[in-house]
Length: 153
Image (cartoon, rainbow, N blue to C red; front, top):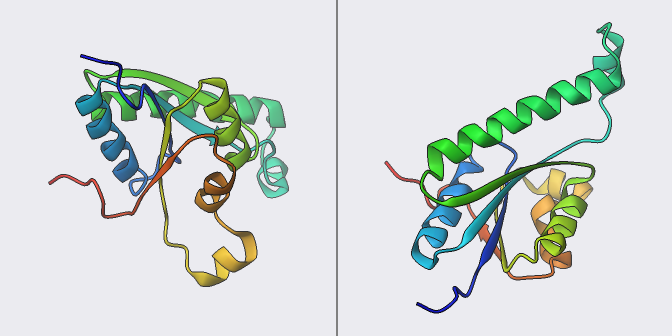
């Protein structure tokens, strides 16, 4: 068998149920093509002041707890949806679209598979979307999976 067209597939997730459609789609591709999957979650750099005002923990302590929770959650998604596949889980911190594009370059991703959440016109017009920003800056092809795609009964 020759090398797969997509040797390394990057799968960003926000750990929500809708984002699992993209994970399922990436799993199907990886299974068919023998690809390696890199599942990633990007957490924010800073926490909202409101959260910090209501805790005795420092921002660093809260961020570390969030990072550990994200690691466990990524591993749970991998165990649930990616069993038997070559998977690496990575938690990054920073601006989501920037971290996704940077990681894609670092791992020499051949494909990025990510979900698109329907937030409506106003949110899109004011903030844009992570998906759109990744599409514009990705170093490789991007497969965008809608909320209903890739779901299995």
